[in-house]
View: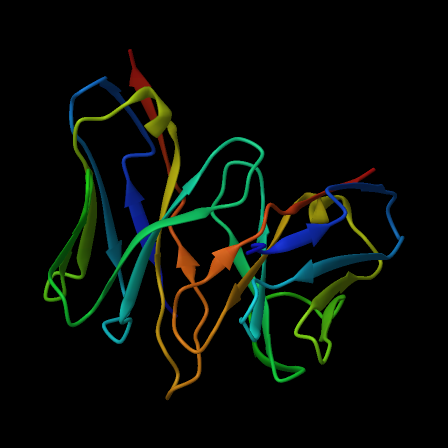
Length: 111
Length: 115
């Protein structure tokens, strides 16, 4: 049983560019949450998708947007990248209870 | 909103000793408290969790306790081994009327187990 997968593993962008990160949830899971983890910090909640809609959102600007597809996979888009967006982006999936399982993350570096 | 504080930030123990990591939360409506282990270059791995209707839970060498009155919860690792070395995060979550909530994490504890 494959766990949560994310792509790409690493990504380097320059300021002002746009980026799309992808996540495939664990088999049987229908909810995807995205988190940003800065170096040396705990993950911070960005938003959560369920039934192809954004259900909750953390304290992140509108530059951060997402999408969930009918197969429950999800994308995170970040526009107008800033240096401060450099972080590990984590996707977590769950099914109708609280247990969230994380993927390996995408390391984004903004130069 | 919810705030989770975690202590200590670093912890060094000898192999075979016990390790304890403590967290406090601010929102009394939080009802789910997981612990994650994160190794270098990897995503967080769920190692144990506890719900607000339970005071203690144990899984082999790992146990978690919850004191709802004091809004404290703790992770206990006994008979530590070098492979337990990692960063550990506590988190709290509040369900919103049946829908799932978002995890609020502590800042992490770097545990080092010396052989």
